Image (cartoon, rainbow, N blue to C red; front, side, top):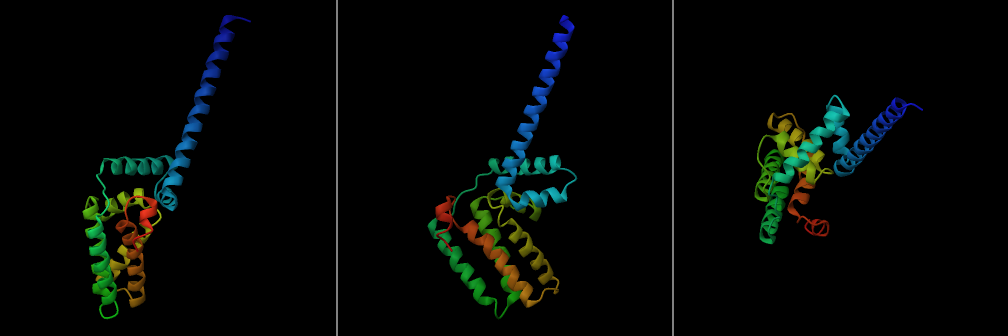
Length: 186
């Protein structure tokens, strides 16, 4: 066989190897992001034009989160916030809209104390999605109900559901960073 044929075979082999490696790395990235973000991966994918764009967004969130100094609450802060949450819930029967607004504010206070930036809502939700992908949708739903309540369009049942949504995120934020500690503070 001529030398040029061997060179051509080598070039084709290298191209095939590069493509196989690229596809494997792409699949691995997708799997890693899906595992980390769960349903948030699917939500982001639906809101973007392509898988590549969605994965770039999720990767950027993860990189942004790595730059933040998120810290667990002290035991005293956990107890203080738990007590405040109980007060917010107890006000719901008499003042559901006020209670819902206070729940939103309490979640913001906990986020602030833990070190999450207080940019606009979408950035807060994106930051939260990295650490708590399973409850970020609760945060979005609670925020939607809060906006409806502020404009007088939410029913008492809507506001009750909003409070439940906020509580799901609140409980996650209140806990420490380890998985075992998260389940202890409720």
